[in-house]
Length: 113
Length: 111
Image 1 (cartoon, rainbow over the protein chains, first blue to last red):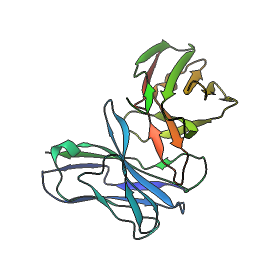
Image 2: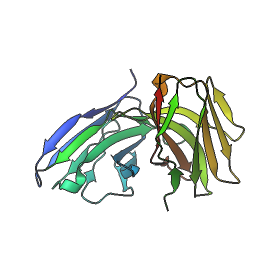
Image 3: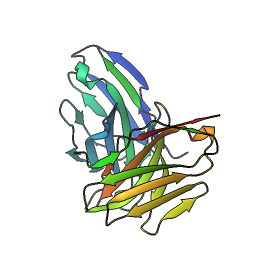
Image 4: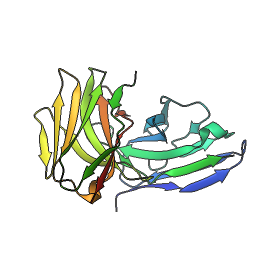
């Protein structure tokens, strides 16, 4: 089944404790992206990657890092999480060109206390 | 000003009603347009693409007005299962597939 898999689905952590949210897709998509969703603000792009070893900042990159060592994986790293990073996170992928939309992962609900 | 604006709702309608959602976008370079559906705390899922000529998929009709930079979604004969948040989405032209999401319009269909 074609899908984007995110883990974990839920995470509660403490301020400053490094964490990684994993994302993997099995559709051979070039393009992958991370979004956060907050009430009233919609989905905002954190980082994106157009292909292996090619990443760039989105609209709200502060406090996050990403890597794209393999085509299928695009982990999101929070080196020192803070309470303002409490949010619902989605990973998405698509083919690089074309007019189709994204396939989303099931989401990760992160709470930083 | 947000790049994609939607009425947040909620729209509370009875089963069988017709409901329309509107969306405006500010970037005239926007190239592709979509409506996504998002159930509570779940991932957004593509409902339909929006074409310049308008398009229909069963009870759902999408319209695009490029001159006014306006997109609409019409749902006829609403079902309880249509209750969700509907996201208006635009894609810019250019070398990568960035989608810009509206904050969503919430629909609640009641018996």
